[in-house]
Image (tube, rainbow, N blue to C red):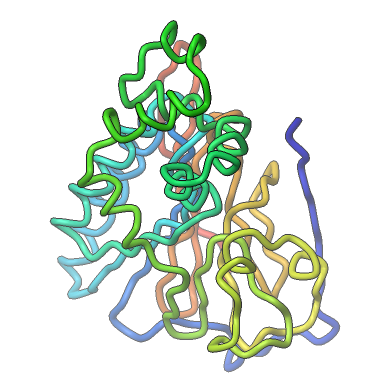
Length: 273
């Protein structure tokens, strides 16, 4: 059962324009929330971002992309999502963060207990997307499934996922998959926290010294809590994949939305900083 978390925070003191978080001049950053196997939404988002980037390049703006992790599991087409991400990295500066689902996926090759956990949390869909036969899967033991992992998952995909990052910092923004431990210096942050944390990160209302952009925790809408921005809008179940666009002090959002008969459109709305 998916638990939706919502949070609202109003700072006690209004920010002045000088205090607004920003990224370096002449740069633009796109942060994409948890894809979770929805290659259809991901394709539309890539196309929309690339078009947006081209418009920026005409104005001399340099762009980079951060995928916030959890590309795999739960949705129907994780294998293609990974392949699309690989190809995108070859043509664009794309940082990919390691989510808890990528961690489970990689560890499942060696750890049967982790494989069991992985399969219960969307890993079954991932393996089927790599071509594992559904009937064979249903009749196989855990050990047999683990053996099949080596056969069906390309080594290039496994190596690619193993190279995902844990954090990216750009200007006044920090990008992580799940969040950080409040009050702990960046160099002392634990990998597990950045990939798995909810509280005390979600309930923390004081400044982290930068704005943390994260996924991991599903919400109906984007949550801008002042000290953090959560953009996991539950693509695999809601049909909505969200990206945050940062340029200077400004923020805006792109949302790939599945409509009637599976038609996908990308909505973009400029929001005040």
